[in-house]
Image (cartoon, rainbow, N blue to C red; front, side, top):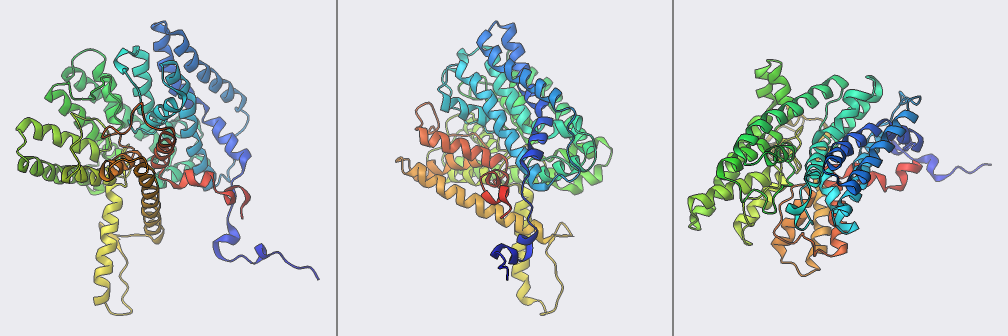
Length: 487
């Protein structure tokens, strides 16, 4: 008699679990190859104009290589049975490869390899934490590289292939669905992706014109716009926004607020669906969150005796943290209530469907509805049918379980990384601030992140930014053995 293996008796979802197929992922990555050319080519051209030959070479070679891969992959179409896990892994790998391909450029600009990878990951994941020194001495191509990688990381990496290169159909829908549910903020069809990408470009152009007027010089306005609309945070100046005028600071932060709103809101507005845009709730959530957190911040500063200018700058820092942009108008506050408010704002982040990081305001709303339902449940009859509702619509169990899983993984990652930073002798609240800034892809810093950061923290925070941008699950799946074995 033949004895069956224990795996033959697996029950439930384990019995039908699908493994990732490396060949399918390879084809998917090959079809994403033009993204790497889009990422590297513009700063390479600027480097050529400036005769920065080494910088042009390390950026031009990946662009040429991507073009070659695209030509070689022409005869290989994505399979109609593209699995969701394969789509997730492909997106995670694309972001990781983007950082690896741009890191050599930061080495050419004078950064050590680990710091260069950190800088590249910070750009690709739209974080804005920086270990660079004396950036104002960099050539223009170096600043274009930082701003352009953040702008691409904000939406282009996640949408351009789906919107422009991959034929519509099941593979496109699978990629879109995976990216929406795991935080890469694109729609589930090629047409919707094209609309979102168009809105992203349009907002960039409009706010670029505004910031060019309010920011002195011909280059800083456009560069700041690229980073602000992607809710990133790299600045051409070493002091971020501190040395710009109040009006310029305000328009840049307005750009960041627009980036923290679901881009679908603007698509609906352009279609004349004003009521649908308002019903979506994203604009309302972001505005209310900005007003509420700003009021708390202003109140604390006024009680501390701050001048009006200091209150204005403090509120802008708060908005920067909430939108996960990472610009600063001055030094971060000392450990205390205001720094804690900033930490909470960074955890909250912008809204689902935007370029912002953080936990997302819409998800927080669902959790509040879950709490309200649990509070009401004891007063209901035993057989009452009372599903959890958000904005009047029943919330699926899959949505709730996904949010709770995200909360759990976020807290676990935060605790582990916080303990590592504390082990280096950093005070508790500033250490927590840096950890949340990395995991929520914010970019604000109390001064801990810098050229002197230890190697282990450099690598851990680099990984944390990658985790946070992909909202953990996709990156963790890469390293799970059962992803590839199916058991």
